[in-house]
Length: 260
Image 1: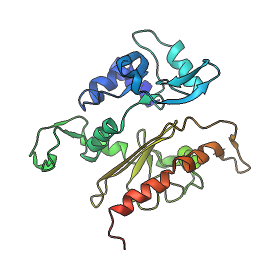
Image 2: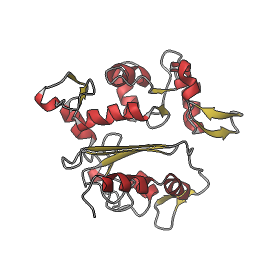
Image 3: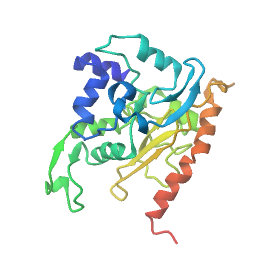
Image 4: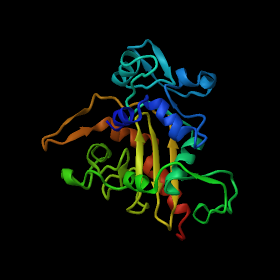
């Protein structure tokens, strides 16, 4: 929905708007929707995710969800193809780190690798990519009036019902892919094929954790509504166990703490 709002206001496709306002300013040269179309020269780097019976091929550089694929291929025009903003973005750990660092800098992109750079004190080349107020809205709960159940009992319920910022899941004291040692102001974004971005802006941490796997989209065989009228998705929960998301995040956080 946010993607369609951006297209309406920005007067362009989501791909072109993201490239103009996010990917190019952040030097995210390996990030794109529909990378087979927009950066075919890098196709040798695209990691496969799953076999598609509907398409009759193993998928590399294509959104796996068949409904989202149908939207990409069969709606819109060649100049203004439709996308589902929540799915089908391909990237690298390096590019995602640039995006996450920009969010940690409250919208400022610092150019160069000088560790002495301090964007707040303007001691290094930097440019503002997003306003500070919009970054703060992204990482602030925007669904507080919906009465969503918390804490989440499962990772799927965290996905479906956790407090949302703009495009992000906020910290949940229950089932939380960021593990047991993030601060309460941390937030995350889960990718459908088995990827996870966790950002913790707490000044004591100032941390990003990027986990990229090619697990593939969880099956929908065990997706439904339970006796409490709550959505469940057992295969999504199983995916988090397979990619060891909590374990990875806990290991990173504990390695930075003074723990005996």
